[in-house]
Length: 533
Ligand SMILES: Nc1ncnc2c1ncn2[C@@H]1O[C@H](COP(=O)(O)OP(=O)(O)OP(=O)(O)O)[C@@H](O)[C@H]1O
Image (cartoon, rainbow, N blue to C red; front, side, top):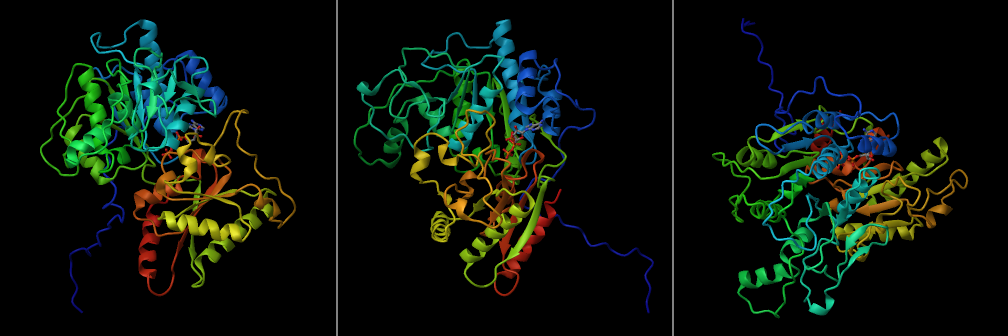
């Protein structure tokens, strides 16, 4: 037999996720980070709130430690922070950006060093910070969370978001009224039916909203109708565009939460135009081309915004990385060591379809969850089921109801979403305060009994709509992925609604183990395996 002296060629190990994520390690060091929340750098009031919210022994998560180290310093070399905060789902990114932002806003108010353009027009609201998020539900949860941190340090937060729909209503002057209203769950919100009067200034420091709602406040209700008319060149019913209600000249912070979504093809134009208009209002116009293809690589064309610019995400898809390299090459990436991994407290299970009725398979798996719950804890946990299509959500919801399993089947077009509160998620989202209206977890009624399930839904069925950012209750112990995930970015976000903040959880991935379609399921299994922490 011929023998060769050259060493055997090792097969190249290809990360099965490298075509989806930016897996290059280009973040700052995670060594020598603070392991406590302290004052300084935090102002006393914020320190008190953080312990009030998280408990006296709370320690910063890795992304929060990075934020404490990097976002409380004087920004260098520019006057403004330009950071991406990237860490796995449920790892506390909201606090990682809220703390430095709230601290800085309060500090600049106390020192009277607000960097406003004195000539910028003042409108009904003139925030000093804007937080953008992709869904109405997330904006409501974020604004509520910001308020929890403001018990001692007083700043005013406005949630400017209804369902994320276009503003096509005709606006009559009669509808103009002073309507900063108290929402049904105690949140201050902008009424959808009315407008704030532009000649009355409402004291607001932070506005949290979806891009659509923020654009509406900036440009006036009905602005998009007019733009469409020009674009289509089709005559339409004349719409009176409302007065712009939000002044941008005082904005010192813009946070883009779920940045990979807000810079994806559906949202990027709205997001970038908000950023460009804030820059304009602050007297530093930046180039803005609405038709830019963000994913094309090319010569860097850096854009510097005249405000602190913070992006957050649990996933950095290659397209977001290419965009940042090209337009924001000096932006600092703060990434946790576990980025692009499933939370370590989240277990994975693969479930094989039996080959019979798939809805029945899901029903049986649900019943097994509750049977095991009853054996272990005597209390049934909640289950979140993700489907790919709205029709599937509705059909599965109807099937389970027929079988006596109460559930909430929620799609983007659902009426409950349009009403403007997060009550449609009651019992599923995390709540901290006693005032919460969520129904309590159903008490056990005896081993194996399913009677109580008729009353309180323990199952929520939805699409990727609710996969982003929402902080689900620790009662949500299982996430079922019943349709093949479109990609691993989507998978990570869906799975990450459980196993948050170190709580235990399990993601059950349904797929075929034999016959046609099983090859696809095998690939999914391999990719999911590569996400293990
Ligand atoms: N230092 C901490 N100690 C304990 N719990 C924390 C800490 N920081 C945040 N949490 C809790 O962790 C949960 C998840 O936080 P958050 O929603 O900010 O996560 P996230 O990283 O933004 O997740 P996602 O990527 O899904 O949006 C929240 O309930 C929050 O209160």
